[in-house]
Length: 134
Image 1 (cartoon, rainbow, N blue to C red):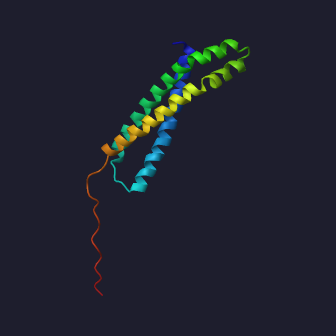
Image 2: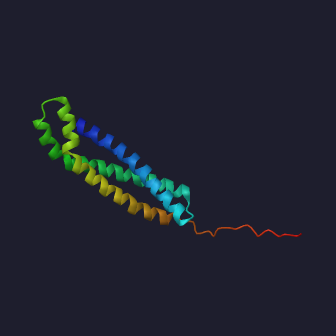
């Protein structure tokens, strides 16, 4: 793997991780609030962070790998530095973002599994009712 492709893959992996982690975390936080579910937050957070890192890494690697054919064709026809930079984004758009969308779907599916693994089975303790003595 060339140094430029490796740099693109690592940079894309970091961007995907931050996006997946923030958007997926917000999605599951809202889901928890709507369902009023009780989950073990530390367990969910750790497992979801690891899962987001795995999904982002796989997405960036295969997205760049899938797009390299189209990117190379566009880079061969590019004459200036700005055309080279834009060819990476324009020609590799569908491959990179298509794999990214699939990875986000996998993140949500895996997140639901982690969500159900992290459910708390303890019943919610309610305080006793107040007694009015007057």
